[in-house]
Each structure stands twice: as C-alpha cells, then as structure tokens.
Image 1 (tube, rainbow, N blue to C red):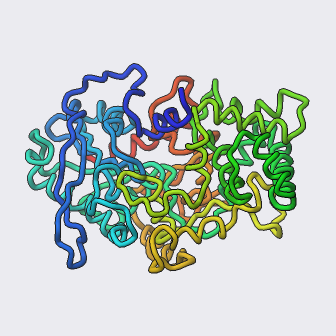
Image 2 (image 1 turned 120 degrees about the vertical axis):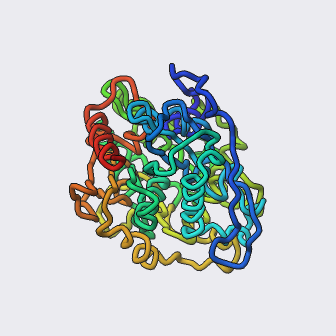
Image 3 (image 1 turned 90 degrees about the vertical axis):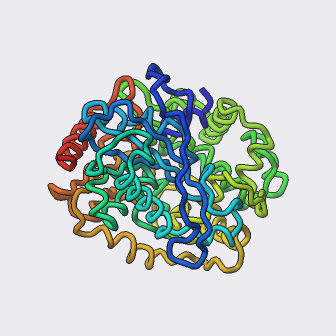
Length: 471
C-alpha cells in the first residue's frame, strides 16, 4: 500500500480501507449538507453548506449521539464507518455523525483559500459551526439525521489530532450541549519552535536502535547543505534521489520524507518506523549517510513520488497564489500562522539535543510563507502566548474530557500529556492517559491486528467514561 494511502487509512481519512468491515452499512455513504453563516459573530451573514455523514445502523431509541470531525482532513465515510466511535456505537446503541470542518474538503464558507477568505477560519467560528449543528440536531433530529432520534439524546464529541482540540474545546465552551469529549493526541498547547516533534521521533528511533546513526546522517547532510559548494549540494541531492531545490527547501523536504511513517500505528508485530527507517541503519555496515539515502529513496519509491510531487512537497514557493479549495495543507498552514504555531523546527544548537532534521529547518523556513501565502495582514510571529492564554487555559477545571497521547507520538509535547509531565492535572472526571509504545491517535483509529495492550487499555478506560457520561 502506498505510504500516503496507508497513513490516510490509519488516520481515518480514506475510503476503501475497511479491511473486513461491512462496506454496505446503510445511509453512511450519503453526504448531507447543513447551512451555516460565513461569520457567526460578524456582519457577513451569507450562508454556505457544511458536509456531514450519518451512520444510524446501531442506533436504538434512547441511545446517544457520537459526533466526530476529521479536523484538518477532508471528510469521508471512514469517520462514521471505520473508527473506534463506530465500534463503541455497536455496544451503546449510538448514532454516529461526522461533520467536515470549515475550509476543508467540500465545506467552504467562501469558495477559495485566499487570505481574505481564510479570515473566517477562526476557532470561534469553527466551534460555533459544530454547536449550531448539534442544537439543530437536538431540536429537529429527523430533519438532520433523516431518522427518528430522541431530542434528549446525550452527545459525546470524539477527535484525534487537531480534531481532538475541537472535541475538548466543545466540551469546555458548550457543556450543556456536549456531555463529554474524548481528545486523542490533541495538540492543544501552542509552541512557536516545536522542536520537541523530532525529540519524540528520536525517542522512537532510540527504542529501535538507530537514533545515533540517524543523527549522524543529519550531520552529514548539514555538512553539505550548510557549508558545501553548489556542486556538493547537487551531488547530495542526486545521492538522495531528490530534486534540485535550495538548500533550505531540500532540508525541509528531507525532514518530511524521513518522518513520514512516524504517525503509523505500532503493534506487537509491526513497527513501520523500524521497517522503513531503522532497518536501513541497523542491518548493514553502511555509513550513516548511505543508509539514510537508502531510506529516503525507499520512501519515495513506495509512495510512488515523482519529481513533480517532490517539488510540490519541498518547494516553499510552490502554489503561493493557488487559492483553489480542498487543499488541506494550505488551510492547515493558515491555522499555524494565525493560531498556534507549532512549527516543526530543529532544536537550537545551545540545547545540546540530538538533531533528527537539518538545522536549516528553523523559523525562517516556515514564517515568511505566512505573508507570502496569505498577505501582509498576517502577523509574524504568531502570538502563541495569547493563544495558550485563551484556548489552553479555557480547559482548566473542565470535567468529562478524556485526554490520551501515545508515548511515541511526535505531537506528544503539544498535548496535555507531555514527556515531562501533564500540563493539566489528571482527575477522575478528566483523566490523562499516556499510551505506552503508541503513536498518534491510535486509540481512536481502526483496531489493529496484534493491538498493543496499552491501546486496548486506553480504549477500555475511554469506553467506561463514555458509558458514564451518557447515562
């Protein structure tokens, strides 16, 4: 399976990955549309249509409503047919609904992704979209779900990754609408330089025995990209099988390629990071840079990448003025520029930390594109302190939120359960659980063959909480 397809299947974003599930579940493949205003809190009252899917297969009168959103991805039926909330719906008689986030996929308040349009991509507007949907679903359930649902149905919001943010915020901001939230790998804490991303990746590499050699390979790459001649840079690009880009763009491209498997689920039988990264370092006498070259070329080959697709991935000048809809990466970049930062940089040299990406991947790699893509009205740098003060602090003392994060999750240090301790206290009503040996949002993804016991435990804890919330 191609890498991008596999990761989309894991994240719940792809159709055709059901792996033995019943693909004929009634109604879930039918897209529905819900009208929303462009701006809930301003003067633009024009309306647009928000896409959603419904799975009422397991619903019985008196059962709850489970709400899910793909967050920073386009919506597919996977979110009502193939993730853990659907499994839980079978034993709790729940209806499952998945709602697309504004400015992703087919749900666009304005049909372009220019900076002037994306000004309506705010946390407040996104949350009110979901709240408005739930209010209508509770007051006119037959109109929204096309089936009879109790107006008194309890509502639980589920989300993994950024959609975990949405789940937690919905419980915090709308506690009368949302009885509980399961926030898996929710990257709730903003950081400008998020160099911890690679430190988590390095921890995974260390557990697999290749961290030191991988870091040595990065040093060899930087010897050329930072200090080498133009001819040296071209020779390195040829050796690694990547196109001729600027040294900084080459560094960014390599960082993306080498961490491509870092969110893939780990099971007792398989670790994709080992198979696709560490195996090249551990099972040969190659120099680190040569093992790195083989790993990079293997990723490119397995995903069927072409020179054009690699250029699109690596060239920071590519598509600056492409405002077409359904570019998740563009919408997500705007959120980083205006909300929470979390730019995935190399650690500062003064930190003494090992590097798993080039030192050229720093704030100067990310921040200039905020204005190049979206206009001079976008402030640089993003004010992460203001974001945390408003959106992280709003979670303090809120009950009925279940926070989970994998110990090998590259986003762990942006979640509540960081590697150095919990940013919010764990309590019986809002527990914080670290899933040992797991990566990103494994507890809400599709159940894996040879599942880790820790993932099973995380689901067991979460399921019990949900049952308690919906009583």
